Image (cartoon, rainbow, N blue to C red; front, side, top):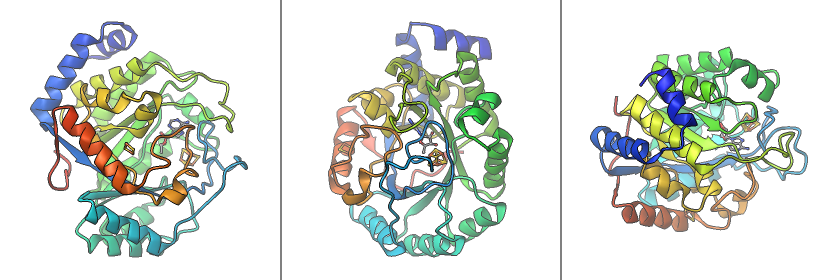
Length: 326
Ligand code: 5AD
Ligand code: SF4
Ligand code: FES
């Protein structure tokens, strides 16, 4: 599909054929299994100030927390008990944890025979290298938007080129690399979303996370509106069709935008779900966007919930790590 065709679909109202085609491509290239990735949100401190994000450093209304290294390892152990083969260690950009600390956590978790995904933002090449040596398998770093001007506006002091550099390093170091975007950012054009989708293909990513931008009241973008679910689903569907054999999660954000959002995403290209396994007492503070789902539940509840969702969608829970299909 070329850029003009992608733009036509993004702007068009006819979704039925597009979603059916995305579902066919998903089935042909990645099958019926839906892989689970248990997410551990281990710190909500962040030294960045992204205009869209509730964890931004300027947000003084948020209660900050950091899990201890032992608590992080204990949460990963919970993943083993719940038969979740991958954990994602996610935080704001928090330099409180030295790379040595993080490496020791990764090493402990690898003893449980889990796949480990890091999602801790921009770090040095050296840090990425050490984490890989410690056993981290994958890394998630969304580029958020490929519109360089918009990127610079939304992430003060940061440059899109640096983001790409990080992704290139991660690939060079043989991580399974994931990226992604938010859909519905203020000032984001359909043309730029088409470029995002083509960039996914270009970067030859293993995983692609796509979620709606959800305005957070304690950020400068509070006054913006959230977008229609259909646009997010169209971006997921087009990404599936263009990139074919990538892992695409039905994100928590799409489940927050619409109570059936994740189920719908599974039907138009998605093949991964990320149940939250953060200890319940911390969940409500990891408020990247408002009204996030699963805040009062615990790991066992979310594990059961996503399994029910997968089976009700006529799919099966993936067995094994669900590594890159490339
Ligand atoms: N709405 C939706 N997603 C958001 N993120 C950050 N802020 C928001 C928001 N207000 C996403 C970014 C980031 C990921 C961890 O969360 O894409 O990469
Ligand atoms: Fe920090 Fe990430 Fe939020 Fe930006 S999006 S403020 S880097 S947690
Ligand atoms: Fe957490 Fe449904 S996934 S309650």
